[in-house]
Image 1 (tube, rainbow, N blue to C red):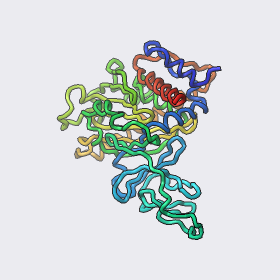
Image 2: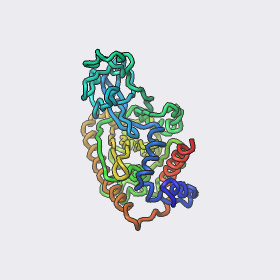
Image 3: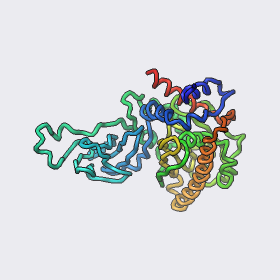
Image 4: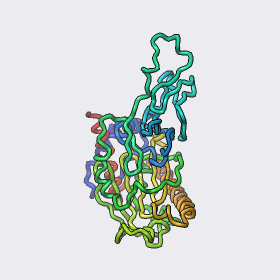
Length: 376
């Protein structure tokens, strides 16, 4: 009997012109999720937020990557570093959520670490003859900043991030995404498989229907472009109506020309950083599987420098948040509905539209990573 891995391999063996959506099993199977965690999330570069969240020494965020709790923190020397978020004594998690701290104190036995992970203090350990503080430092993890995104990987052999994403850097260069200001970030948990939500972000075929009450009226299916992506990403582009709020280039912007002034790029950095980039704003989701049927989400967004520096900036902030919250609510309804449909034994995946090329490329990427992990 075929398992989910075999079914996915069979699906992506067909050329794009004959492509189907992924089989039900890849969304429903605990075993397939295990393959994803081991061969995708534990091997790839994963986003934990924006660099603006680490302005001061001691600023930190925590995350869970393939079941490993980690922290990203700006240390006492100003270095941004990622490290294990598990105490080296009895293995309690150390920090929670995000915030600022002068030191890292275990909530279980008060073992205390410097911001660089070196153990500084451990109460009542003087009678253990083998104990030495110098022998304890939290395991360090690779951490890089790309275009304003803070990226980490558990994999010492992962490719250099900037080389890995060089083609994407060229693609988004006209927008100067690294200069956009994050104005909000929230953490959510939805009742759907992480891939259902990722795929929803990868195609704008659904915009006129799912988003009829928000942005759907500002797009035209005939003005969507879905070119081939690359090994590390996929993307598509849409031209927004000139009247779409905050989406188009600010009147003071002189660097974006022609269609770029109203072009939105929807970008997926594999495996799970999803970015909508417009001349006026960006918004994004960072996804972490929470079992087959739930997904943890970092949801954030912000504005381009032109809108941040506008005299009406505060109103722009409020308008953007209101718009994106409504869009996100619509996406939640659609993607949780898709997952309910997937649970039906009568459900079968259909052919993909030409506007869903990124979904086919995503499926191919997942298959390649899992097959490589199994044989490598």
